[in-house]
Length: 434
Image (cartoon, rainbow, N blue to C red; front, top):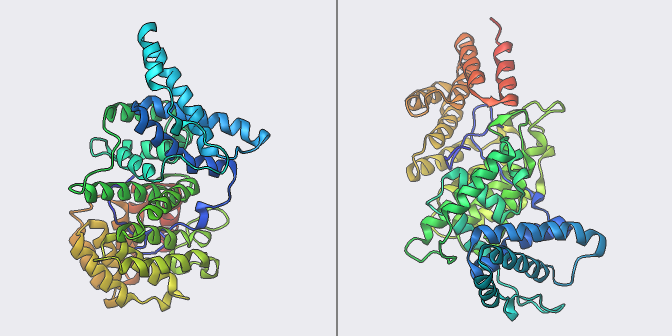
């Protein structure tokens, strides 16, 4: 997964526009929904009470498995979160006991016996830990001592409630490899206090959390490798987790902006691939297929985000996505306004992908020749990246240089690891003849 917070969008023939997430996050209280919603709160409760993140995480996974087997047949308990805490706490105590000598095990068992607050409350009484634990858990999973890959894996496991096998499938790696990655991550943060970061570094840590969520979403919206263009499971999970963070921090402009960005981009998913999975660029999509409910929600969030302090990278990208989504036809797109937003974005965060998106906007406003000048200036900063050749190819084609465009399409196709993208780029090259 790319670490960049900005990316050009393969929906566009030469354009930017990160994805969004729809209501795919889902609100129906299925057993799976309940388990995923409560998993981080249960884990937070155990870590806060007992420490031992690695053992607590294993205990929660066992409690989730027990619930998945028992609840569909016997019904969901009146207080599902309390039930999960009770079962997980029992398992954790068993694990702790197993690690101690008989004498010390008995002493530990006495000390670690669940307090009244950690037993399942009676129906209708909610004494379980607050949602704040979810945010604290996210901060812990995105600790700066972890690599980005470890942050993502641990977030999906501990906060998302995905099994190791599910995370491995999403990343196209063997389950054993992912298990080792998760295990190393847990060992790395072992012993760290389960507390929210202080005001001195809260902003930086929140930025890391949002970046991880955006990376998860980007990988779901446009898979960086493999046969599938879209990994709905990852995109949905990123949206669901971002919704949770937004519920906890509704006045954080960056959080609001990121959720809007995800929603506005994911809204295009129904139109961005054909019946055989082929990529359909943004300019050629049937816009009547776009998810209007998600666009409405995303647009409202953009307006809210822009009122929550200075616009940062997520708010600005969300505003760009909103302008794309508001256009009934490709030719109705307000490119001058998009270019103005990209000017601000590049000024705030001069990342190569943001500048590539700006180059597309320049081409739409001032012509493909002007866009090619911008692309050429980025060559040294994105050497060998397939997106720069893809953008260059489109602009060369529009400039009436078919031979040079074909070569650029072929270079881009050879460089991408995404099979749908490669097929699309080769088809564009073939259309230009030899």
